[in-house]
Image (tube, rainbow, N blue to C red; front, side, top):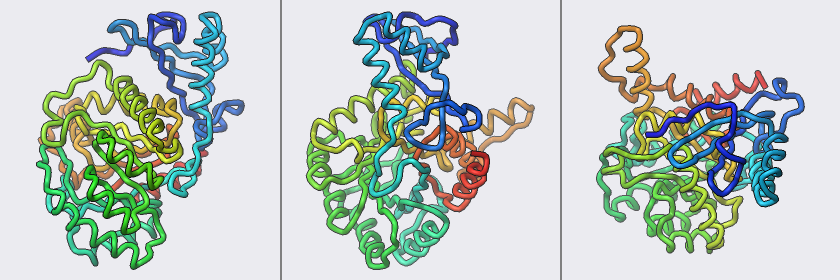
Length: 377
C-alpha cells in the first residue's frame, strides 16, 4: 500500500505527461469561504484544492487555490490548462436532477433487505406487510429513496439463484406501487432478469453492485432511460475481502469509476442518470475504506452525484476496537447492532463534504443528524 506524502511542491507541472494529477476540493461552510466556489451546485464551498499526484509509485499532495492550479497548468501547456479547467468545471457544475430528485440537496436512501441472512439482523424483512410498514416509516422519517434488495452481498455471501431473488423482491415492489408510497424505489440487484421485472413493476432506479459489467444490462437501462447507481467492487462478495489490493485505493477506484462512467455514457446512458458509489466495504480493507473517506471529495471530479453507504458496516467496529485499544481497553467485537453512532459520524463526514446521497438502515437518526448539521450552514 502506497503512502500519500504532503509536500510544498508538485512532483511535476499539473497534467504533464510524466505525472497523473487528481483534484480534491477542500469542503467548507459558506461563512468559512465567503468568496468560495460551490461544490456541485450544492451546500458546500471550496477556496482551496488538494492536488494529488502520482509519479511512478510515489503519491504526493499539495494544497493550492483553483487560480494557482490554472496558472501553473497554463505554464505547462494549453492542453494541461484545458484539463484543469475541465476538472474545476466538473467539481463546480450543478448536478442535474437524478430520478426527479434535486441533487443540490442531500438525500437519504433507506435500506430494505428481503433476505434472511443480511449482516445486520434488524434489517432482515421477509413479510411484505412488514416491508410496507417499515418503508412507510422511512418515508415519514425523511427518506427520498427506498433501496430494496433480495440478495445478501455481505463479505463471504454465496450467490443465490435469480429465481429466488425475484421471489423475494418483486412481490414487495408490486406492493410498493399498490400502496403508492410517493417515493423513489431503487432495486439493488446485479441480475438482468430481476432488473427487467423490477422495471415492469415500476422501479425507478437500478442499483448494481457489480458496476453494470454486462453490456446487456447497460443496453437495457439505456433503452428505458433508467437512472443507475454504479458501484465499485473488487472481485465478488464471496471472495472480495480475501486480501484486496490497491496501489492507493481512492485514486485506483476513481480511475475505475471514471472509465465506467465514460463507457456508460458512450453506450447511451445520460450523464444525469448516473450516480457513483465507491463501494465502502466491497473488496476493501479498513485502511482502504478510510483512505476513500478521507479523500471522498476526489469523486466530485467525475461530474456526477455520489452515493456513500457506510451504515452499520464492519469498518465501524474495527475503528472502534482500535480506538479503545489506544486507551488500553480491550473490546473483542462491536456487533452491527452497536454501530449506529459510527454510522452517523461517517454519514456526517460525507454530508460535510457535499456527498448527495447517504444510504442507511437508520433513516430518522441520519435525517436528524443532517438537520442539526444544516443549522450550522
